[in-house]
Image 1 (cartoon, helix red, strand yellow):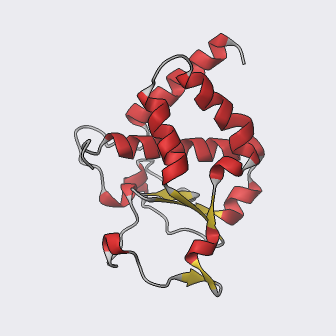
Image 2 (cartoon, rainbow, N blue to C red):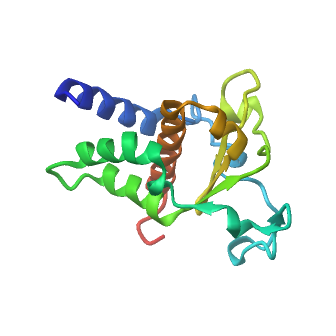
Length: 170
């Protein structure tokens, strides 16, 4: 990849971090935009949940093994962080390695267009919270490889953004 392309991609990632899914005009972020709403047991977990007679954990994946990650995202993260201890790169790698990613065989609950900030309804391909990322498998598999990489990159950047909002102690 040429240096100009790397700079453009770095600028786009930075722009995503500062503006993607961000509240506008001083509004506070809707809680549903950051995490699926739940009345469960919170940090203790949600019990023995499953889909189609399989435990939810059966749908966990390592995104760094996906071809889209290896072909498009891994080289980009490497280039963004090359030669410097870049905090963005560190946070992005944290999102890949320390969050639990799930490929769910059902449609995901949709966020309202007010939460998404589009003014119109959209398809919900992923949900991201402090510990987990859920991806709608059927939608993901319908995408071409570049769009899959775009979705993964979006969720990685949003994971970094969520982490940046936390206090260092957390």
